[in-house]
Length: 290
Length: 305
Image (tube, rainbow over all chains, first blue to last red; front, side, top):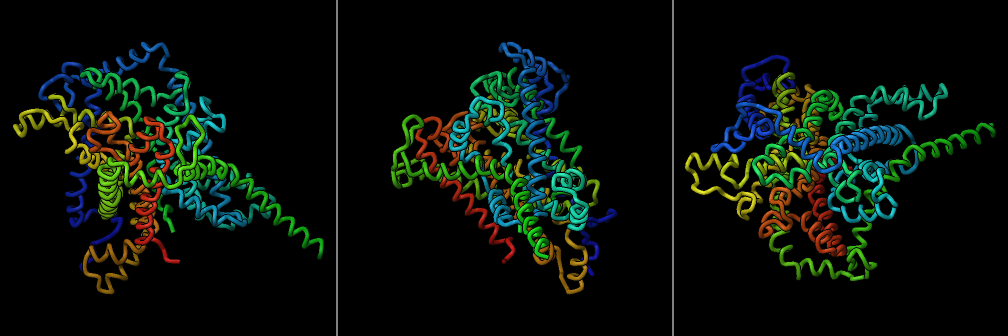
């Protein structure tokens, strides 16, 4: 009976939990420190950036670094809005396309009976191990041979190969009872109707998880701009921010600007995740690999 | 009756066509951007290819050169990659599991915020990771860590952390562990929370004595599939962090190859020296290493067929 207090997911506080807080809180705070530091760095005025010894937290916060960032961007001749526009387009199209692809594929892999289905799923599952940066060169050759070099689709198509998202979606759709889908089919509904009217509403948590994962992979992606685009006008904000900050970061003033740029790229990730955290956890309960 | 049968058959045919139509778009993308690149890498690994002239067959020359001719590969790249992957992969995985387990022992609301804090570093992304840690480990006096050590008299001169062979790899490991609690961590947390509570009660009656026993006899066996997902994600995550050394040091190869991993070696040969054949052979070796690591996960947590 000594394990009576040892409850998973306890409903109320018990003093046996104190030891976990004593370990978890300091670790979580240490993990947070670098992020606090970069926030404070991005808000520091020049004299505080040059201060020795440096202060961890900003004393007189200012938006000067962000202003400098925008000014440096306009100085290059191409307005910052072009890059913002490119990134928004690429990200939103990629997210929409990925959600559509994963729900359709997940549905077929989960609820349709056809030859080769299990093989297909097994291959996709094996591809969870895929490390994209290992094949940057062959992927580049594929992009060239498909005639995609320096075209907009080259930002999107390579990012639609998402074994993890297809896997998560299929596992999630597995939980939907077959009866609902059979009932709809008896009523004469076709697959696309079933997906749109039944599967999509019931897989909202998984769809938002896929959206978040895609956002994280797309918004800060550097590879497509770096290798597949020749024209500066077609590159994305992430690429632009890196070139801008890597040329100036030697100077102290550049440090503040780089922090501001990095923060601008990171914040959308954080905000979207916070909004959707519950959905993500719901999806993750079905993430097991068998 | 007969009519009915042909109708059934055609239904089956229709079903197959519909299924194919549904999986076709993803399958085409999957083939084009995952399978074909892997096949190309495999084929090119047996050729000389400078990206300008057509490739010529080279047999095993690239693989032989890797072991006998490429001194950096044997002396630096492989030891660095193995050290990095062994600590960041299984280390990050173990850390994720332990954190997830402790989080499962506290109430839902604090758990939500604490898991957010632990997950956040994994969302930071390559751009901010580089800016952030470059700034913290900057070699100038105003670099935060140098300034801290200087003002507390631990050191007399600022250390060039990111340019020193003795620090770079360890800093890379630290940074990668910091950002290792990603989607695999969330999966394991969800997995632990979903373990049927009756299992614990039954085990307590059967005489399970402590938490450690509980973890090994109940929790882990009940959530093997999530453990496996977490293990694969941890390995892949570790290798995807492979560029961090070059990003932090700002050069490829890194100072005296101290922070160069196989991923950087591929970029070095592929993009800087235009030796695509050899770079492809390195890619194949990288895939084999990732596969070997993941295999270990399947041996530990896979369900026996």
